[in-house]
Figure 1 (tube, each protein chain N blue to C red):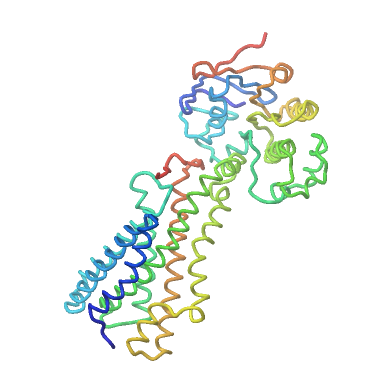
Figure 2 (spheres, each protein chain N blue to C red; figure 1 turned 180 degrees about the horizontal axis):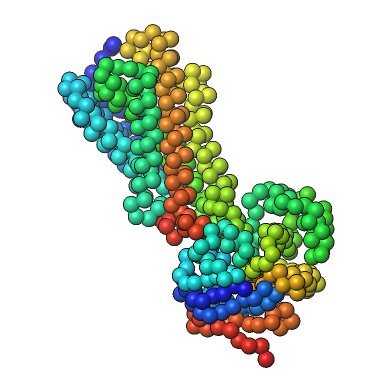
Length: 204
Length: 264
């Protein structure tokens, strides 16, 4: 599990929180409360202080890139570093297979990224992060509004795919969503940010 | 060599005053900076001439070194002055001047010891003009490359952070930015090498021709100087770009744009 013993990232604080593999938690707070900052802090993308550990291994003894291959942040905006979709993936067979599961046509692989709609781009960015986890036994996904550009049908497909990973206890998910129905149907627990402190709320 | 008198020189500057008049009439705002730059140029060249005259006579290696360091310092300042986004703290000048120093020192020493082989090798007659030519050109390439790397690191921060988030190292994540900055920094020297001899005769060769040198000898000298300038630009630009990326990221492979600030 991902254990947050103490964390302070840009004045967003948390202590004694756990995210187990197989667990799905929603991070809820109004806009500007620091949800993205907290997620980026967990991925060690922003300067932070505190103690984090994964499977009992302290963050400080793990090289940052290795940490992020296990605790992976997926931002709300799709980003690309090459003109072609396929240049962002290693295993194209795996990709085509996964694309089918989230309602993406297999032709999309051969497209330039400029042709992607925001919904297609968002799903591909999620798959890109999942591909990083392909070789891992377990891992954590930090999803910043993962379905914000998707319609209800596609959002549910994404949830179903993640649920598959969750039930086999291969990943733990911490996600931000402004869709209350999604939070109530998909999250097992809720973390809220209150006055700069991340606290756990037990779902009634 | 035909010497020119001060009267002829003054007449030469008339063209400048003509443009200053036009610029004043249309209030382009160029007049003042044009005249200031012209005045600076005259004063600086005159100073340099007297310094060189002194150095040529005394043959003092120590003072030649001081003159060289002063030149590098000014060049470093010029590089930094052209940056819109700058590193905070001493790094502002550190990166520019440091890279310039490395590039200029390597290239100039290489030329003095390996190609020119004057006796003694540290004669001001060779050191100062060579260093000047290398600095002038390296400075331009570096200023362009540095501006590019700072601007693009800032503009592409989401992309870079996205790659870092996938577990890429800081060098992988900034690869596209470094590549384009390296290209941009070298464009100037590539263009000027391609055009020299066809479109223009470079300044140094012009000087030697007018001083009565054999054209073939002058061309050889010019080619050597072009190699040195290209080498200096490559070393300086590369060093400056990698230093910037190194400074704008940290040991935990995070992008540290908080170490950058915008000059208005």
